[in-house]
Length: 62
Image 1 (cartoon, one colour):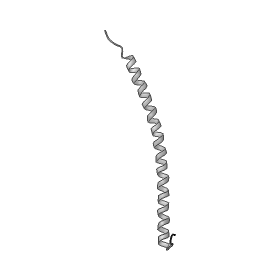
Image 2 (image 1 turned 135 degrees about the horizontal axis):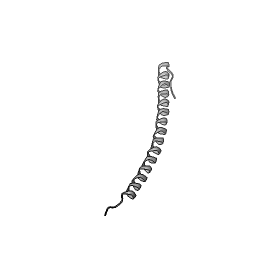
Image 3 (image 1 turned 120 degrees about the vertical axis):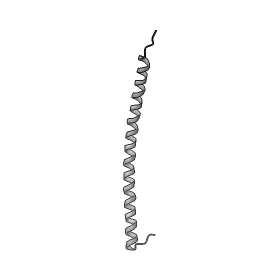
Image 4 (image 1 turned 45 degrees about the vertical axis):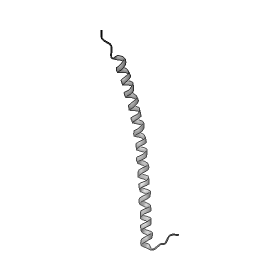
């Protein structure tokens, strides 16, 4: 007597679908984090350039 693998296969396919959805969700979150990282890098670069300019032009802070 053999047992059908149908239910087990269906369950695994459902798990695969759930994992694929989680992957998509994480990919969106990663893309958002990369965008924020780029924005922060731009801000840091701008601040560094301002700092350099102020130092070179003799501007004193505070």
